[in-house]
Image (cartoon, rainbow, N blue to C red; front, top):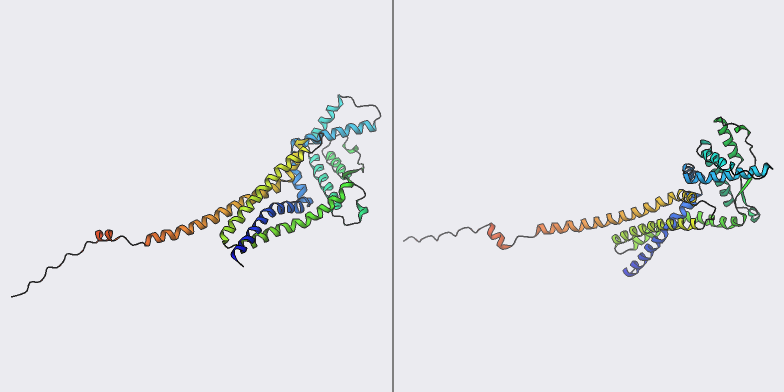
Length: 321
């Protein structure tokens, strides 16, 4: 193959590597990170101690208690003096072990239900209704924990089986197709990135430069991924409804994308390290023979003459008469 054609193909493959690195990392994170219930629950668990999340949960639980009281007790609206008290009770509940248990269990049940719906290979009728979750097991666990903590009237908490919608029916078919695409892309995009980088380096006429270019392309991909995460966070929070607390939503976004941010910085650091190491190795190899050649150059004649003066000439022998 002519050198120019090899160089052109190598440049194209390395450019594809720069594009495939961030998309491959994103697809792999979605397919193997978000789609794993254990990793999802582990990522969401620290949010039970986040102040913004606790405040949002306290407001939601307090409003739910007020609606339940208005619905079950036909005594008119709850007095305004009672509302702060109920929110304080809900806020105190978010600092207990029962809340942390309910948080983890609720996330696990919700993730399992959504994942089963996205991976369902049934016919179109399986997507006729929304994805619902029964939080009765969560209520039962909270009730048991409060009873063990000797909370008054905890044993009288009703455990009702109520279906709560977590995914609308109209979005399920589209999300299911996108999830299947992510599962395929999560495996093949990283493989394609490695294949393009290896082939590009192999075809390159100057492979050392190709290695440096590949490392810089990897670093650039990691930087673009970190930038995309930052921009995506701002866009996600900007599109939320006004009644959704943005600090709590931002904390959830950061928890879910924490692994992906770590991967982006690792790609950036690894690429820059490999590029710098390759350049230093080349510099040291070029400088070492130059020093050797400088030591082997003979000294000038004038210097040699001054260092070794000539021996005195012998006097001619007189002829004997």
